[in-house]
Length: 269
Image (cartoon, rainbow, N blue to C red; front, side, top):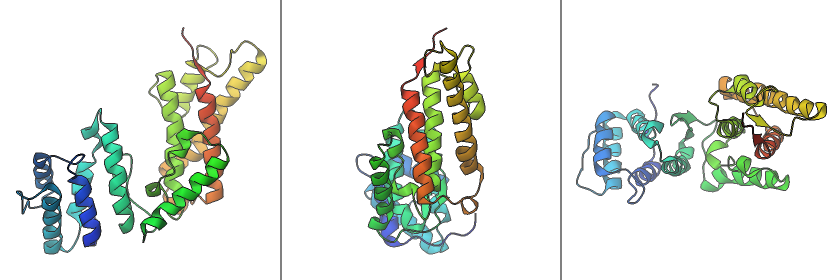
């Protein structure tokens, strides 16, 4: 990894307070184990958890004049494997850490990995203002609640790349939940909405018009994933900029998909 600059004292304190939170933070033994794995000396193991972490981070950073091992520690904390059956704990910790990390231009993705934002926030207001504005504009369009939940500060910076990516993923996730399938992309859509023996149906499939509508929705989903999810999954953000008006339209289309999926029925063979 490229040598990362030291983290400011204020941000480092905030990170330590989240991970060492009295109620929702790591246990003392977990902290000791992860510090050792990240090769950070546990300088003050008898202090309260957040102070113990802060001192360990600050000591390592002062000695090495970089923050690489601290980010390694955070990645270990946010490994999704550690949160099987505890998605609420994962999301709380990710959200709270991201409120601090945006100030150094970083976010924790749903994979638990650390990603880089195009621009670091300079104030909490700046970090959240964009999310509030996007949420307001989408609400005026009566956009589905499952789309609105991706209007979060940590997903938004100079453009709307991550918010769009997470929104498109949410549509695929809902198809999997409703159909019981485990695939993705075209394979998932074909399995869920096949005319012969579909897992899901958006109407009764009794007339040619209904069958055409059903096939059209399947093709819409394929196009949606092909144009937006696949692109954001594989293209670097700098090569695929998403502006606000594009994000509004893409997320509105995702809203339509969510509503039709909510109205679909599981076909029992």
